[in-house]
Length: 448
Image (cartoon, one colour):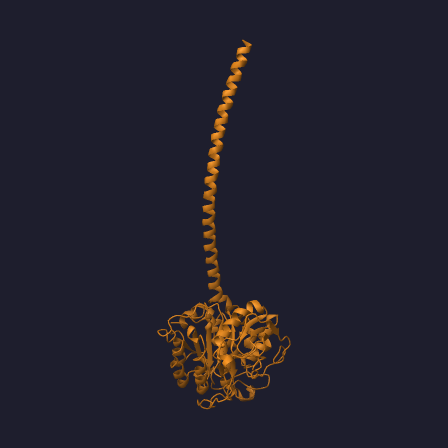
């Protein structure tokens, strides 16, 4: 009996073991299939998740770029604007600033990586005509937008620009130019101090500069125009307020060589790799009449004021120093930059250029002459540079090494300024220019 019971027990145990083994096997097989299926699902889910994350990150980057590139009230220096009352001409020109460019029918598309060109002008029509003629021969100019910024409104200047056909062109007008206000600030107001007037004796309005001189409206207009122009172009104007690339700035007494545009494209692309200290690219040496080394090197030196190009990152650094710019007692924008703004960056500010100039200053009519009762300074402009064959084609090679001028002369930190910029009204207007396109109410009204 005992033997038979043990035999049945063994047989039962063996059958149960076989059954459990089969169940375990099927279970393991099912689990394996589930894992394989889950793995495949996980890979799809991961791809979808990565895709969603990429879209999300891209959206965030776009939002950050939009916030960075466009108007933002945190960037305003004056939270409440104290702009002068505008006359009808000022308001009309402000509206014209929002008109679309001319010649879109002739040049419907801008090149993908184009560098916009800004030509800022005053009232030297013969000079402007020479510059326009030189630009018409520049290779690649038809690929970009030319913006002409006027300090006031002068019909002869306006007609020259309206005659341009070789590229898209847009005219803008400084709406608070002293030239637009005949009997009120920022022009000359009744009761303004003149020359070296004593405010107590004359009972006149104004703040004398460090040399005892009161403001001259035609002189302060130089700094006001340049500063307004940069703020409007980078932060207010529809065609450029989201532009992240470089913008090239030239003036009406800068003769532009045929290879200038192609060379500034090359330099702008090279500087981030070849010269991390370089904030900008230049078409010409900082020494005005210097033709260049004519060597086989790229040159890094202090930033010049003839044909300079920089991007929005640099503009943000410049804009952040609005208080320093607006308070410095010098009516020259470039000397203000050299003496107080660039030094405040904390590191040396270099620009990258080629060893041969691609633009040149010409003529004898400086802006200090201004106009005499509305009559522009006349000069035949025959001192324009000779163009050689090498100036007609791009002549900068990416493989060139960079030679750096580490210690250069000129205006440096510590220079006190030439004066002409001490009136508190000019300081406030200057800060308003740095603020107006970041204040939503004004930005809306300025484009409607």
